[in-house]
Length: 142
Image (tube, rainbow, N blue to C red; front, side):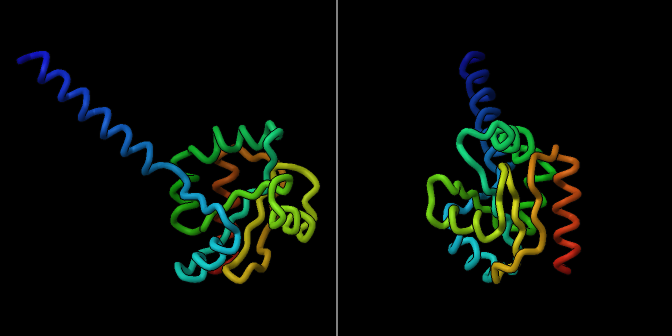
């Protein structure tokens, strides 16, 4: 009986941990146009992460910043987030050209109509990234 109880406790802990991890991740949209539509519906801003597969700083951003609890909370509360690779997507290539992207990562913040509010080239650690998110929200008046 003791072994069965131990397995139940371990299983419950694993489920709670998995639910917590899932709840703490950025909700990414996969399509730019869908992100704009969703932003209009939910009255949110849009964050476009322009990245490439070979970019080390992009991977560090994914690993260290987009997993930070404060960053995740701020993004999910105020933004529709979308990742775009200009080397794999015609939309990404068009956006990179339109916004003058010359290096990666390059984060572009837009209102729900697609108007640029701020552009953040390069990597920022989580605390500095949170400051950028707060500033964009203030600037947008949300």
